[in-house]
Amino acid sequence: MSHEQANPETDTSKTDVLVNWQMLEQRIPLDDLPSFHRQFLQGLHPDDNWQGVGLRQIQSKVQANLKQLTRAGQIQQQDDVLLVPKSLVPEAFWQYLKETE
Image (cartoon, rainbow, N blue to C red):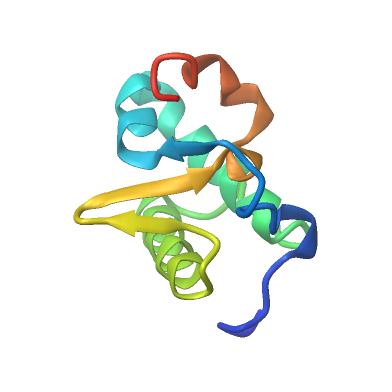
């Protein structure tokens, strides 16, 4: 995937509810964060298998994708806060959104 290319199915940043990424990560139990990050990447890159990828590589890929999405205008950054469209959050983790929206 090139830096300019985005998944059109997840490009709803103009109409989607925005979620504070850091607050969301803080609300997800630590044991569930690797699963959250893998599902996030799976949503962006559905043809890739993230299950066998090491935790450090996953974290690096998540950060790289967040930066790419910010450059593409799909994520808003206000100071150190990343505002991510809810559509990019894996549905299994929407239960943690109520406190962050």
